[in-house]
Image (spheres, rainbow, N blue to C red):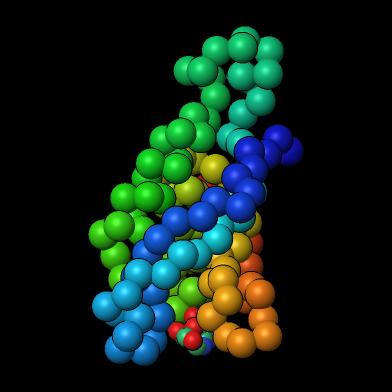
Length: 119
Ligand SMILES: Nc1nc2c(c(=O)[nH]1)N=C([C@H](O)[C@@H](O)CO)CN2
């Protein structure tokens, strides 16, 4: 299985269950591992055979700008489903973390793995 990874992807979004979290954007950190539907690009060296990671980043940034999620779990699930359904990945691992939200904890979050139903 070939994988594209995006590590330490930081972005601002509105997330959280408390009223102040609906008003103030927070920085989150995403870590993604995205299984590829084919390894063809390894042999052809052609972007049209690859999963273009810049399109994934653009799509995720659009979601983070447009949506408010209460729970980290819900945001992680939303991103996982986009990767599986829109980018045809057979498997994805998504971690979403908040930074410095609770005193004494540098980073906390959730990590989920999902498989496509079509593979
Ligand atoms: N399992 C979770 N627990 C909590 C979440 C969450 O997203 N998943 N979120 C919060 C608050 O928004 C918190 O981050 C603000 O300090 C609390 N618990």
